[in-house]
Length: 296
Image (cartoon, rainbow, N blue to C red; front, side, top):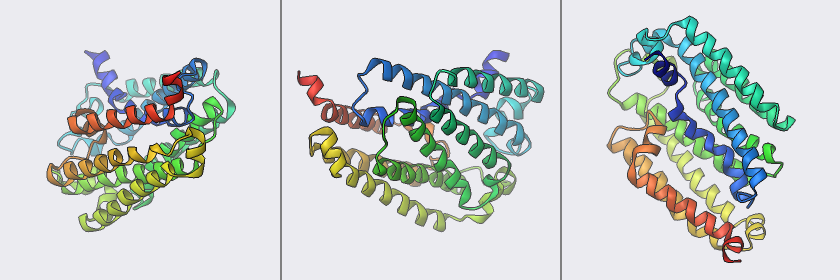
């Protein structure tokens, strides 16, 4: 039982966010290069280790505020199923585990994952209480995942990929704030998350409209960019844009009509239309980017 609670503390469901590490290898057309793919998998494992260490640290720091939250009070630390001392030991273990993985990866990757950790430490102890900077810090985490993925296998990252990552991660972060403001857990909002007092639903909806629009436009412009057309020897990538548009619209529907969004991971892994749409997008991208390998 204790092992299950420790496993819950590291939040393996959140590892799906670390799939952003694979974006550079997918769009570099190197997904079928086995040595590169294995290196990228190592990078993914390293981010799972470091992100889990951050979740453990967050739960240690937020244990009191979690106890007044209707859902978070059942987390292992807030409920008392895991002690603070045990959580600290787990935190150190995860850091050491990540260091061991990183030894086999390039120095630039190590720099990127170190910046990721520093960004999260700043978020945990300061930035999470600063309006706007809190969601930009979340966005920075996703950008660093993409950049680290590129560093791991020594490929370049398109500027459009970075811009798209900025907008989609801001969209997810702002959606989370929107769900917290309009969801069922309205009691003791400031105790749950102090920064929520600086937001309101109207302001967050305006920001989310900008973030959603930016995601769609930047992705569409990437698909028709000269660099993308030259790299994939095709102008067909533009036809994957409707999947991105549908994904954003479906997410907004779940946020506004179903009061979901507080857990982006839960939406992405449980909403059947989003799962199917994501698979169609991935298959379409693979067929276009790797068509020469498939047809020869």
